[in-house]
Length: 105
Image (cartoon, rainbow, N blue to C red; front, side, top):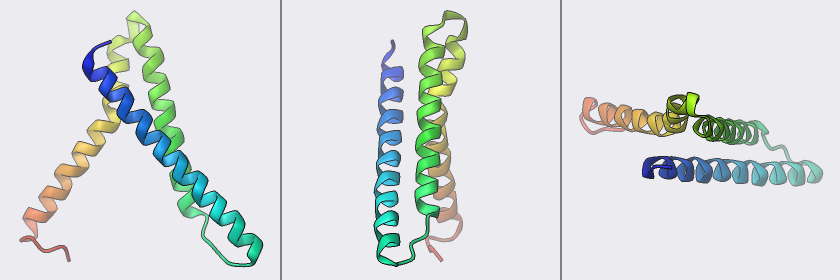
């Protein structure tokens, strides 16, 4: 395995574990507050759970694709999709900040 693949796997696994941990904590808070009669929105838990599962599935598919010689390029593409999305969002944020004259609002 090459260095960028190890880097990609480690970043994807850490991100997936983070989102799954946050989903578990939000679900715990949701259940405990529901029991006490307080209303808490389940939307945050659902978003974290979906993102964690999607990252886990992408990482698992990339792992299986990299093990197969015929699907090696597909494995590399699947592995680098989350990193590409982060870079694209960073560039989008930079364009927004530069285009707005440095103001957030």
